[in-house]
Image (cartoon, rainbow, N blue to C red; front, side, top):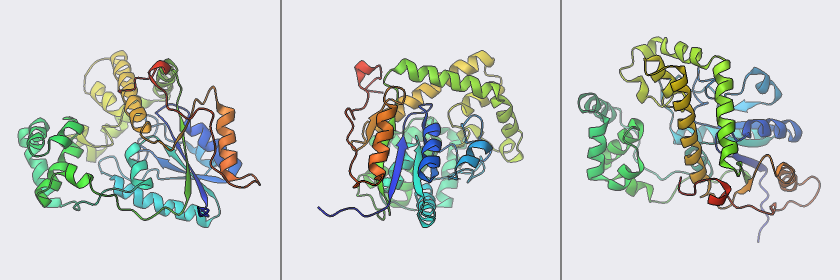
Length: 343
């Protein structure tokens, strides 16, 4: 079997609040790395506290990429992310540094590491027509339209996800083929110029992750999260937007709940409860996706930190022949670990 001579890169994956940021910063400093964010909220300017975006001190410790690429009233696709992340990785390699891909957005990881199925480009006229229909009939009606033409896509896309509903309808109207049919086709993407070690950090006990989620939200609130959302609401582009809650940035976990709270939807305590629940649901969806990454090594950051560090050292070489790391237990958390396997 030929030896893979491509330079190394690390993909550090895990559910929200699992401790990825601290690990990525530590490895970047120790191994001469630069961090490539794989997080769909961090691409938006102004989403800082509630998105746990690295602050100035953290950015001073290590270079970061894929942050603050779009304004919160704009959109950013997985295909755009894959293109821009590839460019960032190429620049990191040109400097002789280690790319550390860190985040929890599964679609972004998939687009970058595996590629996406080819499908029609966006068509502004079709997209505008769909948006106008949504304004007249509502997204629930358009989701029902999607269920008639593409039941598989409608099952996967939630009625409250206007961006994906619009894209599925757009693809069908442009091509005459359901988006689910396009997605079953082979992925097309140039081979990455790196060999990637996939690592998942996730507490085995669900209660531990839930406690981390609650503690992080409380820290965000203390740091001024609601004031950050008030500032977003005051932006002229968002004030003028007919449906700001349909924007990908504002649908980010925590931001939607904060926006609704400031619209008069309950008090601060009710907002906290809704935001914690939404973040737990996000973590469950992330874990579901991560279980499909069969070539990833799983570690509990609290109980197996030393083994995780050893895996990185072995992969990077440390003066020894490079080889695949072998974990004593690389399985994902199962039901008896406190994680719902059908999340």
